[in-house]
Image 1 (cartoon, rainbow, N blue to C red):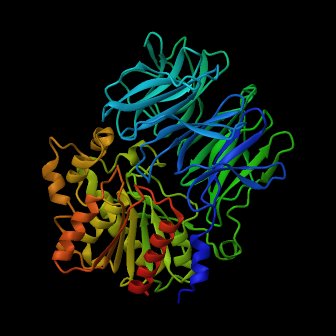
Image 2: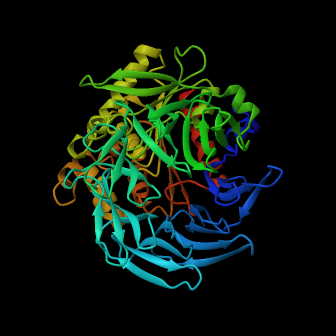
Image 3: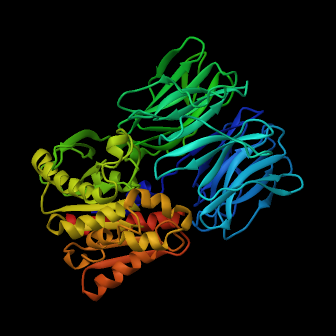
Length: 594
C-alpha cells in the first residue's frame, strides 16, 4: 500500500549541490530546488540558508568574480540547455542580461584576471561550430577571438592574453590547448595524434606549469603535471590502477591538491601535499558521491556529498584541525535516514565471461521479491552510490532494485568504456539478460515480476531489452529515451551529432545496423506494459523519439502510456514535474510487479 504523505517525503526532499566558494569573503553558493526549481543559495551570517539571487529559470553555471562582488550566471529556458549569460551585481542586487541570443548555446569560460572580461563559446555562426568570444562586463562589447569548426569550450583564463580551451575529439576524448586570444597561437597539452581524455586543468601561479587529469596511454584517469617548456611531455603524478581520478582543485597557496577518486561508483577524497609528495585520504565522510570541491582559503575547502541516506548537502574540511563539518541540512529527513538503504556491491559474469558490476538495493530477505533494474544513461555514464527517490521508495515497499554498470560504462577503464561502441551496441543489452539470470540464481528474486527503467540512453536500453528479450519483463519505464538511433542522430542538435556518431555509429555507413536493431521496428514484440516520459524542449533526444514509438504501439493495441512535460528538456528540473514523473513510475511498478 502507498502512503501518499510518506511517498511525498521521498519525492520532495530538498538537496544542496554545486558548492562554489565566493572569493574575498569565505562565503559560498550552492544550488537547491527548495523553491520548486533550481536556484542559487548561500548561508547568511547566522548560517541560515537564503537565496543569493532569484532567477527566472534554472542556472546551469555560476562564475564569481575575483573580488566576489559580481557573478556571471548561465541560464537556459524551460530545459532547452541553450544557456544565456547574465551578470549579477551583489552590492546593487541587480541581475542584467550580458549575452543573449535565444536560439544559440553559450558555454562560459570564466573571468579574466583583471575582472573586466568573460570568455564564452557559442554556435551563432553555424549550429555545429563553436567560436570563442569575450564580452566586457562594463560596456557589453563582444569580440570574437577564435573561430573553430567543431565543439570548442573555453575552460579558464591563464593571463590577460591566454586562455585554456577544450576541443572535443570524440564522444569521450578531448584536447586542451593554451590559446592566445590576440594571435590565435595554440599550444597543445599532451602528445599529438594520441586520443585521450583531458579534464580539470589547473594552472600554477608561475603560468608555466600546471596539473591536468588524463588517461593518456593508460586505462584510467590520473593526475599529470605539465610544463609549457615541454607541453607534449606529461609527468604521471598520482595514479590508481583500477580507478579514475574525477576532480582536482589546488589550494590558494598551491601547497595542496584536493582530489576525488571514483572507486567503482563510490567517491574517495584525498589530499596531496605538493612539497612532500605525500597523499592522505580523508575519512569519515558518508559513503557516496563527492563533487564540486572549492577552496574557501588555504586551510578550508567545501564539497558536496550525495549518498543513499543524504540526498545532497554541503560539507567543509579544515586541514589544520582535520575537522569535517556538515554546513547545510537541506536533505535532512527522518524518513529517509531511518529507511534509506545502502546497496550491496555485486558482480556477474555475462555471456562472454565479462565481469559486470552492479549495485543491489534490498531490505531483508530477497527471495521472491519483485525487482526493478535501473539502467543509467550516457551510454558513457555510470551509476553511483547516491540518492534516487524511486529506488529508495521501491525498496521501502519491498522491492529489490539492481543498478548495473554494463559494458560501455565509465569508471572501469578505457577498454571497458569502449566495449559497446558501434556494432557492439547490443552486447550491452545482452548484459541485461545475463543480469536477470544472476538475480534469479543469486538473489532468488521473483522471475515473473521483473521490471526495467532507464533515462536517456538508459531509455534506449529499456526499449531494446523489451523488444529483444520480451519474455523477461513484466513492466518498463522509458524516460527521454531513444527509439531509433538513426532518427535520433538525424534530429538531434548538430552540435552533438558527430560526437554521438563516434559512439553509436555513423549515418553514412551504419544505417543498416541502426535499422536492424531499432526498438521502433521491433515494438510489436513488446509484451510488458510501458510508461514513457519526455520533455518537449529536449535538444539532445528529440521528443519525436518517444512520440513515434507510442504512436506505433498504440496502433498495435499495446499497453503504453506517455506523459510529455511542456516546460522541460532532457532533465526533469521542476519539482512539480519531478513529483509527477516519479509518483507515476512508482505506482506503475507497484501495479504491475506486486
